[in-house]
Image (cartoon, rainbow, N blue to C red; front, side, top):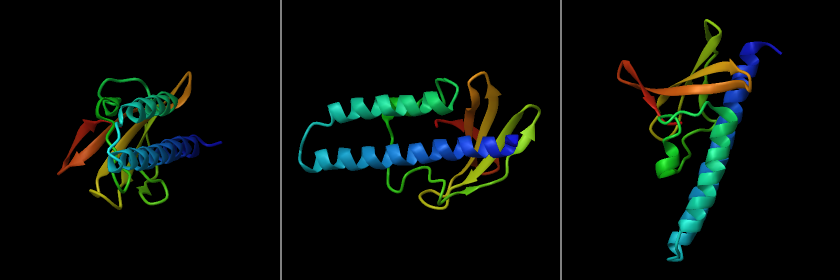
Length: 139
């Protein structure tokens, strides 16, 4: 399979699993909050699920994995490979970058850096466009 296709498939897999995680976590957490119940066990369970997704699709990095600290989730979810525009990967040496344009929520523009490792294609970092500059942000 062509490298560009593999890179997009990895990114779509990540986005899909993150969408499903964020939606399920938000729904379960809001249900507990609405019933005036403690969310601690829910938070712990979804932290483990998030860590598993991040480990599957990305290189461990304190900034990239910062979402494990606050477990941010919202509606609509941050990522959705069926909603967002995923641009063609651009090769930079042996690695690729992929620009993703969010269609809902904040309409953010992300740049994912993806490289081939011994574990396959993994996300190295994500940057978010702020004006005309890019800033490294959590996955």
